[in-house]
Image 1 (tube, helix red, strand yellow):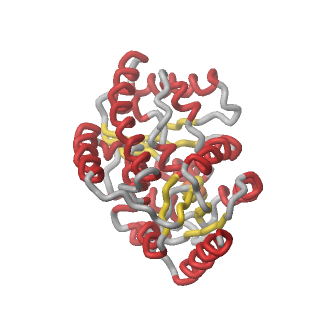
Image 2: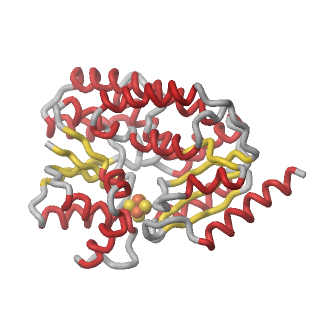
Image 3: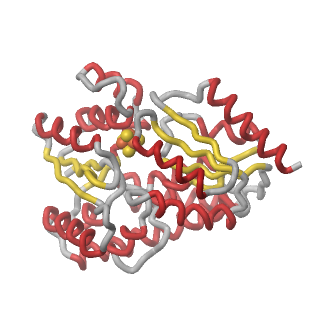
Length: 326
Ligand code: SF4
């Protein structure tokens, strides 16, 4: 069974049941994102709705997804309406919530519900978690090569970490490809870009944004949410792992994760990316208040390359960082 999902959730359960989990976001952005958005608008989605939700809808219709796990709490309220539309199309939908109160008991209830639906027990799920953790260890190494020797660039870091939400639906293949990539990266000359940036917020819909930074003698050495998708804490249980996952909880969890990275990775500035029409833009107020380094909010709307206006804003921001050092 092809099981699509709308954001990272306990994917171990789906693997344990012998099904194929598919992160719908990755399929959307790597296919024909603009065409999918336009098709959803033609079907009646409002123009002033986030492009991701439109893209997910069309991705599900075009890719013969059997069941969709909609993360209805902790991610996006648009998912509620998306699920209603999918039901109308006779697509099986189930919900998963990251509880707002973030208590172990409440999250355990959600995990139990998911395991019951897929007919798997704790032991089976934990076995899968242990296997996936071996890959996650390699991703921690990849991340380390990004901010220490910089043998892995920001765009590569983004792609590998964002893909770990479903391990490209095939963990064995993913792991082998990751081994080859790491071996090749370790042969590269250590590099020292002049400006190190944090990229925080949801993965960007701007398809070439990571290519831009190296042209300015800068690069991203901390991808906040992508790193979260890679579950880097290697906790003992599924429950602990998904309690440590900051993305679906409050902005304060995110701030507590980002703060130590600023120091450890010697970051010079933050690019806070948000999507047009997304509630997460509001979080910038507190992120800017508590993360006391140069901060630039960038917004994307339709899937596209970097526009000239954003390029000028990024260029000016990087100039400010250079100037403030002299
Ligand atoms: S970017 Fe924001 S509005 Fe769009 S799907 Fe994600 S959470 Fe929802």
